[in-house]
Amino acid sequence: MGLEIPDGDPPVAIDLDRGTGIRFEWADGTASTFTLETLRANCPCAQCRSERERGITPWPKSSLIEQELRVTDAELVGNWGLQITWHDGHSTGIYSWGVLRAWAGLDG
Ligand SMILES: [Zn+2]
Image (cartoon, rainbow, N blue to C red; front, side, top):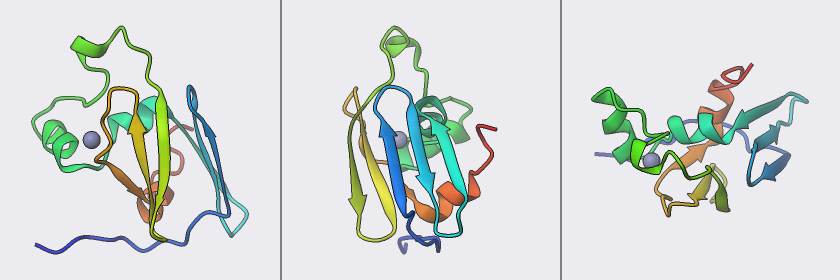
């Protein structure tokens, strides 16, 4: 099974608010802003993908519902995406530029 890497140019700017959301500014002058809830609920890692396939929303989880969603760390992965570490230690999701661009408008 090969690693699937969607095409996408990297953003020219990333504005991370650890308690609110992330804003990506793209080379063509457009920008995409996502709330942390949207990013976490759509986490592209295998675990969250399989949860969604079974009809489970990766976030919020009832066991963690009283915890506020926060980003503790965000790291560039090569030239193709952003790895986000969440307050609960979840960090397996890598958000590729192509996926983030495809999600534009998800948060209005
Ligand atoms: Zn995940």
